[in-house]
Image (cartoon, rainbow, N blue to C red; front, side, top):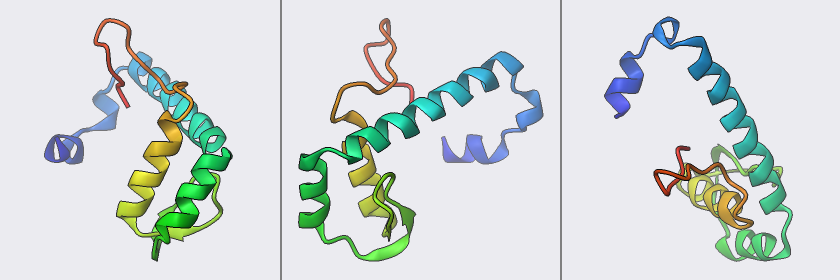
Length: 94
């Protein structure tokens, strides 16, 4: 999948797809920021003691390692079950 994305020419992507992508990304960032504000998420971040790195903790105001950011941002995203979903695929496109 990474190779496909790396070779993708954005100009060939239909405008409707790009518009939907914008909405999905805004949804992800907003829901992740809300999840990051929960006491449970803050406790997880404190307990994790993630090392400094290049990746942001959304809503956390810190840069941490990429693996820690992936896990902690992912948990914040799904903590309130408000993340983008697809009712027919029974999954999350993002």
